[in-house]
Structures are given as structure tokens and as C-alpha cells.
Image 1 (cartoon, rainbow, N blue to C red):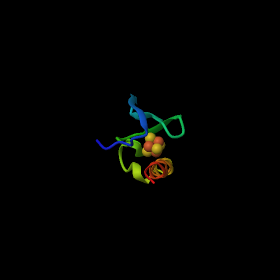
Image 2: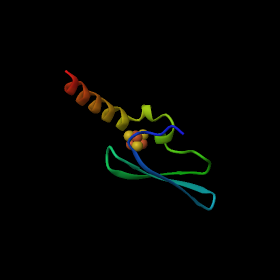
Image 3: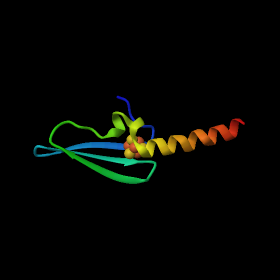
Amino acid sequence: MRRCPYLEELVKERTGPLRVYRFDCHVDHRSKRKYSFRDSPPICVRNFEDCELYQVEKRREDGTITRYTD
Ligand code: SF4
């Protein structure tokens, strides 16, 4: 499974017909929840490159690496 390198933890729970995805993001240090009636994991384990937080952090890291190698 593809997963965002900044994803700290992903837990899937079921409450009746509802799926609850709990996930922690290393970028904003927040615990988030996503609710769905069908299997629909968060962006962190799908197209995480589209996530704005991912893009900001990746750019920051790439900038750091460039400074070290210059
Ligand atoms: S995809 Fe976005 S919200 Fe999910 S862990 Fe990565 S940076 Fe955080």
C-alpha cells in the first residue's frame, strides 16, 4: 500500500455501518478523523502527492537538502 511518508498512524474502526479512519499527520501534528459508509481510506494512503500539507513539507525538505548539497 502506498502511504505518505508523513503519516504517523492510521487506524480503521467500525461503528455499525460506519467506517472511522483515525490518522495522525506529522506535518501539522494533528489527529484527524474521516467517516465513511464504504471503504474509503484517507488521502494519506492513496494519492498523498495531492495533499497540500504533503506538498508544503516536501518542498521544505527538498529546499533543506538543496542547501546542504550546494
Ligand atoms: S497525506 Fe497529508 S494529511 Fe496525510 S499524512 Fe501526508 S501530509 Fe499529512
